[in-house]
Length: 308
Image (cartoon, rainbow, N blue to C red; front, top):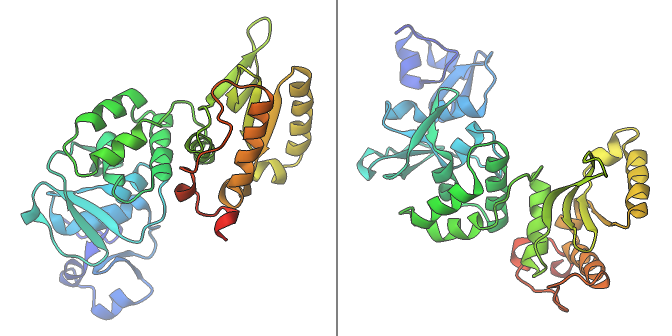
C-alpha cells in the first residue's frame, strides 16, 4: 500500500518511506501522539487521534472510553490520553499517550471509519472516570442523539459483567429523554440530588386548539412552576433578552411561576439556586417537597459557596 502522510503513521513507517528524522521534527509534519505523525496540512480531529492510537494494534483493538466518546461527538471532560480496548490482556501494548483496557464483552461498531465501543458499553466504560452527574450528562446526550433509549440502557447496565456496572446502574436510572443540553441535565441533577421531586423535562404547553405555545426546560405542571436554564445566548444575541421578557409576561398571565437559572447558579452558587426553587415549590404547595433540603448534591457540585 502506498505511503499516505495525510493519515497517521508511525515514526518507523515514515523513516521507511524516506522521510528523514529532521523532516519529521520540522514544520511539514505534526506529532499526533508520541511516535505518531501526520502531515501538518491535516487538521487533527478526535477521529484522527483515535486512528493514531490504534495504529500499533494492527486491527485487534478499538477506540473506547473517552476516545470513543469523542468520535461519537459526545460531551465528556477533556482528557489528554487516548483510550483503546482489546479482547484479552496479552494483546495490550505500552505506548505513551495511550491507555489500553481489556473489553472482553464489548460489542464494537464503526463510526467514521473508526472501530469504537457500542454506546451502551461506552456508558459503562465511562463510569470508571466520570462523576455521577457527568455520566448522566453523557447518557442524556446519547439518548438525544438516538444512540440508545433510557430503558435499553437500564436493562443493559442491570446485566453487564463489568467492574463499573454498579456505578453505571446508578447513573442510568437518572437518564431521561428530550433533554436539550448538558446544563439542563446538571440543573435537573442538582434539584433531584437535593431531595426535591423530579421535574418534568421539556413540557410542551398547548393552546385550546392544540398548538404548542411554549416549552419549559424543567417544570412541575401540577403547581405551574417552571425552571429554565438561561445560557450566554440570552445575553449575547440581540433581541433575545427582550424576547425572554415578553415570554415571561405571557407566562405570568397564564399563572405560571418561572425560576430562571444561569451557569453561575449551578457552578458557583448551587445552594442559592436550590433555596429559590425550594421556596417556590413550598409556596405553591407542591406535593412531596421536604421541609429541609438534603445534602446529597454537595459532593457533585463542589463549587458551592460554603466550600469557598
